[in-house]
Length: 379
Image 1 (cartoon, rainbow, N blue to C red):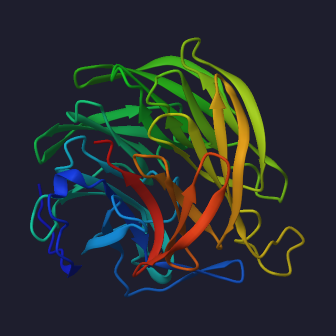
Image 2: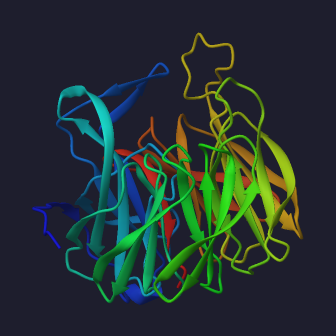
């Protein structure tokens, strides 16, 4: 494994008794800006990864590390090992070496040692082109990466802090667009959203042997971000839609029947779904046209976060709130009382208190770049 010359930008003292804290990791893209609905590339500014303590409200920044990241793809571009020893961060894009005003596909997977003082990148690996969603299995011995630009899933063995490539699994063809991969609680199966051909694949896992069962579910238009309930009963995924300003949907999978059983309209472009720790709620970040030019008929000067109560395979709206622009991931504290939303334009985490019926804005956590991917530990 190649060790990059990664630099730590800033470090605050880790909380006393760090094991009692809930860790979160935010990947921040500094390559691109949204300027009146247009993506503008700014070369020469490093991407960063921020380690946060979710045990305080609002969450507290613990450390920051330079590492490649990307806003392109679902905001599950970060994964934290079950024992909180390492984090994995994918980068689906990089500055185009042939034209610094453009980006091109990347395949980077950074391994970050969360126990080091200060935290640091200890390895940079290759996944596949357009590396986006990444997840650990429940045992922390296997990691999978969805490679959106080549139609594959990369397999990595994990032993402690050592991550080793173990092959790739083709899904459909190069245009199938695997976006995110998530394990079921039994660790024996995983789901992969495919926004290129509007499907969700089911993988079978036996140790480090990963196979395509060929079982597919028909999603909505462009299945994208996905979360599996810790109860193992349902999964919820967002459909990115056609990008024209139409109302888009999130969908519910009955994991016992392994089929899509419900669709719920949420508004323009659901970017992320974030499952609460107890599996009782799912938060959906909705672009709501906030990423468009102000002259666009579908523009709104704010995004939305919507929280749905999960009742069997039904979703009931429990609360919603306005957020910033071009907002990405959503993450919950372990007690389900704090919800955080990443907003790219504002370069912050917007924090809310949730009481089961309403969302109350409690503040912001400013970051050095545009937050584009976030996960919390499950400990």
